[in-house]
Length: 288
Image 1 (cartoon, helix red, strand yellow):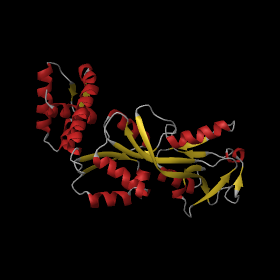
Image 2 (cartoon, rainbow, N blue to C red):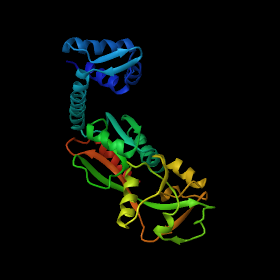
Image 3 (spheres, rainbow, N blue to C red):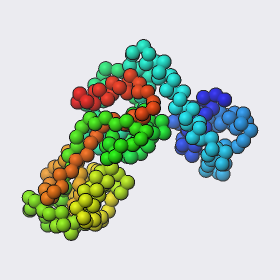
Image 4 (cartoon, helix red, strand yellow):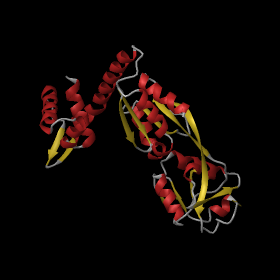
């Protein structure tokens, strides 16, 4: 069983498409199909159902997928370990980050990293912080620079890099915009536009509101902070957002007893070694 055939299988499963997998692997579609067919022949089992353009895993394929992913992750880690013995910063760094952090925090560290280590193949994937943490846990990412989970995760190691104060915001013509300070009950009389219910930022707010003995009234939700800022600015509700997005289109208001913050930082797997490239990326973020 060859690594190349397992990689083709995992890519097709992940994209649910032979053509998309071929594009991701920089191969032709027939080459990817041949590798999958070779693996099916070797295992004497069909791994995918192909109905028209739709591709889905068979029960055998579904059983093989997590084991194949672990084997590929182990192979990548072996290559990384051998490469890092030299002390050089090289190879490939697969990391994830959120759009917000990529826009507001990473430009300077990334510029220094690419200037210092042009030989590193940098693969940056933009996704929600929660998805990035799961990807580190499964081994799909070596490193995530994201909003850190409010609670410790058993398989994840977390390093705080930046404190990220949060601010309550309303539109400049909102009924509360003329007030410098309001009570939580006054704020909650108005609808909110908030990060999605599964986000770490939403969890921070919900815990604070729950501790105050009340509950949220949510008008709408989205995981994109820039979209939330726009919704607040147009008057569709108040929100809790990073203070870094404050501008003249919104107004910050203080809420009694509510001084909330989140932490941004590096997430890695506790049981997997960190490459020299990953360690240097974290160092440069700390230095920013």
